[in-house]
Structure formats: structure tokens, C-alpha cells
Length: 195
Image 1 (tube, rainbow, N blue to C red):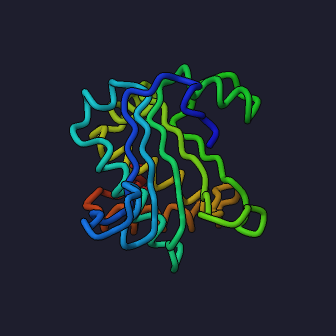
Image 2: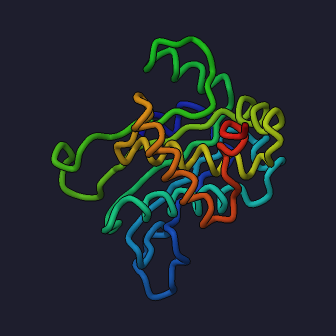
Image 3: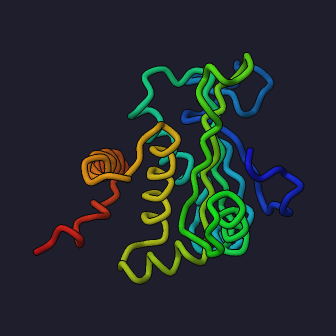
């Protein structure tokens, strides 16, 4: 993980998969029948104050994005960190050379062939509360929907998608729109395409 547990005092950390863990499963609280683990670490308490059930909404978006792009999710682990602008600014500076906050950062952990035996660590997605909230207000979206969009966007980066060319951006946006529609979230790019 990019952010270790002792980097910033976390407010809440939960890990669980896409489905409810059944009582007969292993003692691991993160285990699910689907074998996918999504750890949500809330580092900025404003997230919980502004979006009821933020962890569940983020986990649902992450699971939907992964399931849409990876056929077998068995043994996959991903971390979603709900941080603040200050935390994301440091990460953006240290890892991307940009000394400013941004809405979302994605940190892939590398290909499966590069990892030791065990779970496939897909990577980390880190969101900046103040920036995400400001964008949601400016775009007339709910904070919950904008957050789910950025989680899906970050997860697609972890799955190898990018938006560095017009064709790849169009493909990535198409995937985001489809995943979000299944979650009941409106097309986040509709305004940009309006005449």
C-alpha cells in the first residue's frame, strides 16, 4: 500500500468483499465468497459526515469496476483511501512531481507475475475530500455520485486503462459510463458532450 497505517491516523478502516461474508467462511473478516477484498480506509472524517455509508458506496463502486474488467476476481485485493487534500498533495508531489492536490490518484502494485505468491494486490486508489467535494458542487453532482465515479476511474487505471490519447480516453469513459449506469449513477460526461 502507498499509505501505511501509521502514515496518517485513520478514522475508520474496513475491509470486505463485494458480497456479504457468510457465517461459514474463514475467520478472515475480509473474505467473501467472491474472493475479492476491497479495503476502505477513511482518513478524513469529513467523508463520513457528508456521505452516509460512504464505505459501502465506495466498496460497491470498486467491486463493480473490478468485476466489469476482470473475469476471475478470486484472490484480488485493492485499497481505497478516502483522504484529504493535504495527504493527496504530498502523494502527488512525491510520486508525480506535481505539488498540488488532485481529485484521485491510482497506484498500481504491478503485474501478477511481479508479485510473490498469495493475493494479487491490484493497488491503491486515493481520493482528496476537499477537491472531490468542490468538483461535485461545481458540476452539480452529489458528492456520493462523484466519489463513485472517481473510484471507478481509479480502479480502471489499476486495471491498465488510461486516457493519454483520444481513443483511450473515449474507451475509458465508455467503460466508466457503463459501470456507473449499473450503479444508478448518471453519465458523468453528459455535460461535456452537450452542444
